[in-house]
Length: 190
Image 1 (cartoon, rainbow, N blue to C red):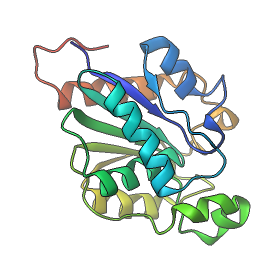
Image 2 (cartoon, one colour):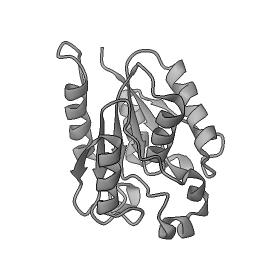
Image 3 (cartoon, rainbow, N blue to C red):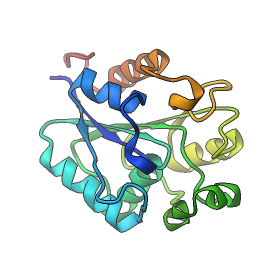
Image 4 (tube, helix red, strand yellow):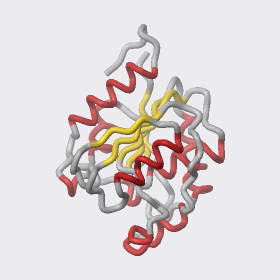
């Protein structure tokens, strides 16, 4: 059985045309819906992620974007992970410790400091070389601290609708490769 995706959006819950929303429909993914998607707190957002994980049967792969990435990292620190979480795709991680980002979106300061400890599951960080909310060098530091692999998406902006990423086919290829790496060979995949 294919692991179930758990979509973990960032601020604003990713719009209808965002690749996370499109993937949720395409793959029948579970989705984390925060009570207040514009006011993240490590405890509140992590508790909601934990609820979705507990309510979703089977093996899981978390798919975070933007502030969804700090959500996953804080959740892993607070809850120690979960035995059914087989990996995480961490896309365009927002650097919540970056003053520029905090000035643009003051709410992200609530997610600072960003945990920089190894994750209890395999992860792939996909970062853009011209993301306005995190430098590629900072993404490298995050990936190293989390024990994650890192892939450059090139100059892809924030890897969202505004930067021209609708269905994000390249991301789907990377997702498929992650599923092959993180699950036994007899598991069916996308």
